[in-house]
Length: 76
Image (cartoon, rainbow, N blue to C red; front, side):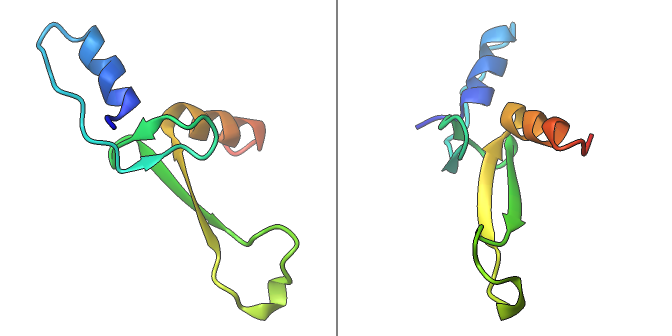
């Protein structure tokens, strides 16, 4: 799978560039994302007791979904 955001950039470019290999899939939209276009966030699993000291879960999103989620959360 190739990175969808790299693919969009290559379509808009006048110089042909091959999209990068996807390293993950966006947790929200499912698009393939490379390391340059991905965002990793860490949070406890909902419903788990916060006082247990359990590690936080990792969540990978693409640029557009990350921006939309942070804007919706008022973190821009």
